[in-house]
Image (tube, rainbow, N blue to C red; front, top):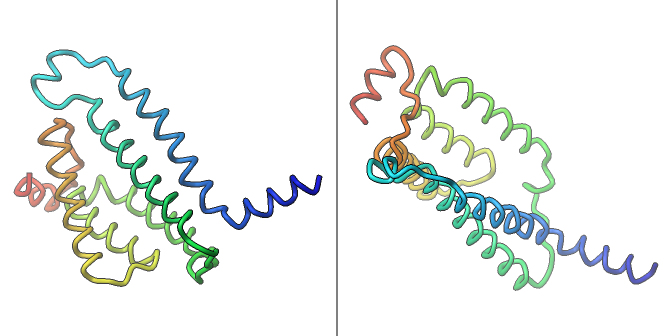
Length: 170
């Protein structure tokens, strides 16, 4: 029993490995499923098809999780920051996601997504303006190009004036 206890204590010290390793396993399985999508030839000639985004997303998830594993293994000791000890960050993140989901159809993807990304990053503790602005612009532009143009999947445009302004963007 002593050996199992030591193992569990060490696992607690290196608990940061559990999430990225779990994400690697889950992403690997989802990537396997994505390669099993049956895509009609018509879809391949008109756009990228429904299998492209899951493949890209899961490959990126695997690479980022591997990066977290390598970073954690190289780290000499466990460091706990105040952000990780603050449970209200979880509730703030959940609240922001609920508000985003409720406003997405009304305001539209083009306008609500950059605001949501910047607010979410501020809520989780990102304070560098270059990261905030850069990530917001790059992610929003990437999604606006990938979904409607390459994958032929329309994004919510909003209603009223938001719809009219979204039509100017894409």
